[in-house]
Length: 282
Image 1 (cartoon, one colour):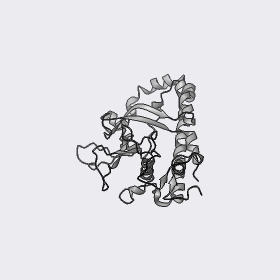
Image 2 (cartoon, one colour):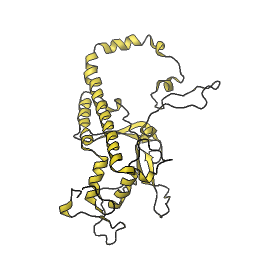
Image 3 (cartoon, rainbow, N blue to C red):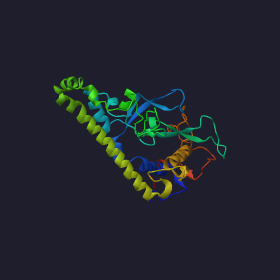
Image 4 (cartoon, rainbow, N blue to C red):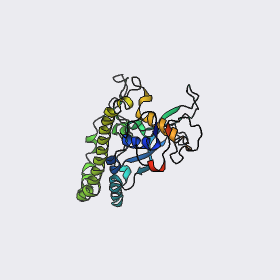
């Protein structure tokens, strides 16, 4: 059986399991849109994320990449479609403060790669109801939320009575173009993103049943569950063994695998592939 191993396994076996656990073929066909956001301090990797978009990353030859290309050809700006936030958007790096664990190794810490941790949820306000206090309870934290723009919470739709007919008239003669060149394409792109998210949920349910507590429940709580059993931590741990080099950002460098000539590797039960064994798990 291809995944019937725990201690002694090859690089190829690990990569096949890793691909099964993290990348399903249908998800690869759909692709993923990743917006690159700027940090408050661009030179500090632990600095909080802002909503400022500085780039976009889409895998080539995927359904989403083809739709985005069509959208751009028709004059669209991909940044106009959505923030494309993804929950649990973080990566692990070496602790910039060089904090070490009980084994003397530099700790791995997680950093956000999207604003709000990839999740936009209504705000709470402990001072709601206090005199002369503008409550933000229920507001969304994103900067385009209307109440942040006007600075207060009130019914403002009746304030634009003189603007409405003008905008309505400006859009009226190009209704069909707006539908075909913007709305329809944007709806297809967002629908594919939703499909990918659904596939991710299904994958997590499959893994939960297939590998036990290696993958936590969808509502992961670090106060209850051990982070060392989280799949991302396990993948990071094994990846570091097979690829011990890191790039300038402290991320694992997959272009520099462990040298097979190491006479005394730190994990001797994690072995390399012979040429005949590559691209297989058994």
